[in-house]
Length: 466
Image 1: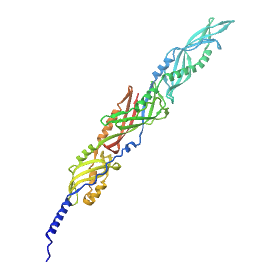
Image 2 (image 1 turned 90 degrees about the vertical axis):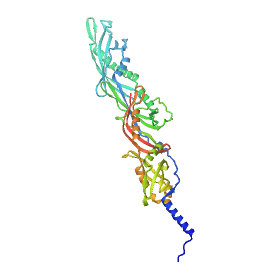
Image 3 (image 1 turned 90 degrees about the horizontal axis):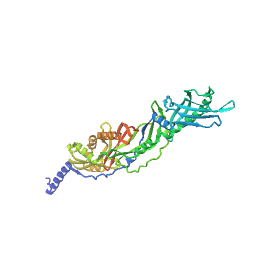
Image 4 (image 1 turned 30 degrees about the vertical axis):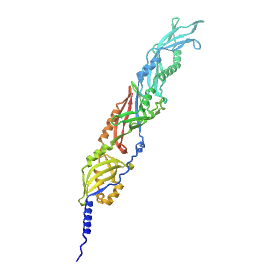
């Protein structure tokens, strides 16, 4: 006969089994929360893209003509002494000169001249000084160029002359030709006229001031987007220039300002120093093109949580043994090594809180911010190993990773609309930005105290229209 166990032993056994069944069906865990931290140096350490801002410069040939004609007019030369050559000479510019493009970078032009000559002669022991007046055209070629120190210059050469009326002296009823004497004089004097023309261009045509204005205006902080409080400013570095090209009406060149374009969320307080001089020009055969700039778009943690809760709240996940977990809510924040921490509050066969970590990245195909390398936080792992190993065996973290996604189409739209507005900016009266966007792509996600900062790289062409 088997003696029955005491009644109190049976009661304790019954309570133990019942308690075991309860705890095996409804686990409660509260792992320690991961440390919240952010590395803000990642944005600051981004490699700065070199950009080239093109500034086309068109000089009207008519303006250069105007400057020369205003300074180079009237009486050009006067020799009122017979000493040395028995000649007195006066030379006037008769009409305005006109440039014609020759096609090799040179312009040709005629300078209409009126010349008065008085010649001292001895006839039968008597000194006489008959005079005459005639017209001619002196021909020149001139090549405009810009010096390294920002002066527009011309290199003008004499190309001969043509008499409109023949120079003759009338003496005693006879005409005395003096073409040879006058030709010799003009051969020497044409060089003087060429130098006068070159000096008038260097003194009167200013190209440095408008470029210096652009240089300084680009430095000033410019708000790209009010909604995102996005600002840019430019750090000019060097100036590259192509040789002048000419056609009938214009002289063309292009300046490319080598620069770093910075962007920031919030206006930078860095003091901007205005330049009084430009760096020496570096001449190149072909200008590099394109600009690159990083813009930053913030998805706040409150926005990320709203999207995450819309995705996961009330979702149910099944596990082995018929177990099931319901997600009550999600909270997100930043952790070490730029990890996104996902805090999930659960009910069902596991009551409490679990923490997942993952790397936030941009997915080209989904056009979303997604998670990779998602896993249980170390302290959550340790708790689950003791209390609910079946959760770790159920690939919950992979399911969360697969379903997690924050759309970034608004980021693309923000970047495009911001730059489009930026291109409409008038830096100063008559100085406007002009450009186009070729590519917009997110290149990284950096966790900031405020949320997920998406770093967007924008490439395109940027110019300044004068």
